[in-house]
Length: 392
Image (cartoon, rainbow, N blue to C red; front, side, top):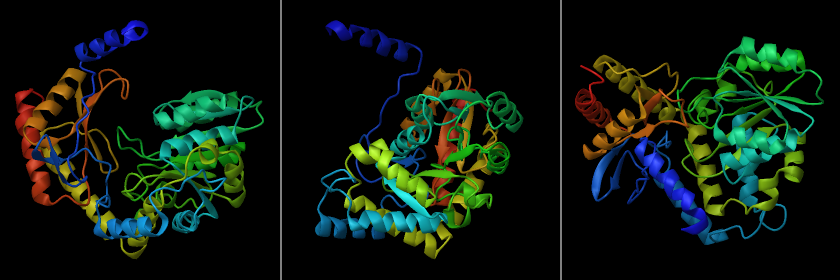
């Protein structure tokens, strides 16, 4: 391997420490039951919260968009890649979120990488929750601003640090809306109040709140009834919406500025028209009915209650994300492997995604699961959990 021989050592160390991530391959659509390695397995690992990734109405409009627009936009948005369907999706998202305007990005990761460096720079400061998503962390690093981490969801620590770091032209508070590993919700109401009190810009990455929290899945800002008191909302279209892409919503001035300075918007190809069409249909479905969101929460409550009854530690999640806390990485990875052998696909999460000693299997139920699916999953968790001695 020559110059890259160090990679061999790194990969071996990952295997030895139980941190090597085996990437499973789906042999069909991302549904409640998926085909993997030639067998049907219960899918408890997907972010497809509402079951929209293979929804027939979304599939239909995606096909129609390909017939009308082709398979790709053919350019970046700022040159020849903006199609009327992109504009319609941005308008629909702004209306859905109750904001003045919206801008599309290629993914939620791209949205954070584009928004944060466009808002703050090397002379500014960012106050970032210590458990923020990697895309927020990377976006903050790209900005070259001073990054001040505050203790997770600790508003006293945040206020203390805001008072310490005062001599900056711009100060940005940024947080996940729902923290993806633990399923807890940011104290966004207090963040809004601190932003107003100390003249800080406020931003939330609501990747796991879109389609889950708020009226009809309008997200964490709507959940708390904050309106435009949070300056910037970043979201993804790849989880509850079942498609792909990301966005930022806020004022007309914010979106206008991001169209001039958001680097992924300026330098990476536009979202494909079929994806945009499917996203539009997903919003239409959510505006018509809260049935899918309601079913998601019903399934979540049922699964959590059964797992708790069985004796599992499922943390303090306030959302459908269910962390099955196991402590050591080798236990989490071993249980995940055994569950897969029992036809349950549930992924182990260990360091560095979560701190050492806090490894877990993160379970993601969806609106598409039936009660009997969840019963099957719980029964297999009980069987494997007993084998590993984590429950009696």
